[in-house]
Image (cartoon, rainbow, N blue to C red; front, top):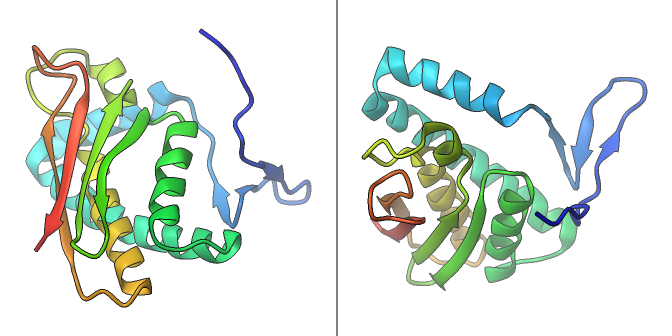
Length: 176
């Protein structure tokens, strides 16, 4: 395993203890802490209901993130989506690779290797990375709107590394 410093600035306000990366305040928690909380909520609500809640929250958060990061870095279009995937990968969620992206058409395919969720869940014969789906649609819709495209999208996971015979997750974004 090679170790390298992420290519993102982390600033800590000595008066408040708030961590900031680029234009947004951040939290830093161990993976097991986050995923164990995720699993506990899933046990109470069921994975389907929890996925619905996370989709809406993730959509809103990704929209906000893309808007702020585009402004902070002076980027637009595909560069924002690429920056988003890079930052998600650098923050330990897994390694996200854009296999296809067409913002005007509202389509994308994103591959996920080394998912933080799969590391914790293992092979459970169901997709466990549903937290990310709203993120992809929210990012796509914010970027499309910023470019003047009328498209609105939805995202879904089509395979997960938590399933037998699958080595990676795969997500698709498509127009509503």
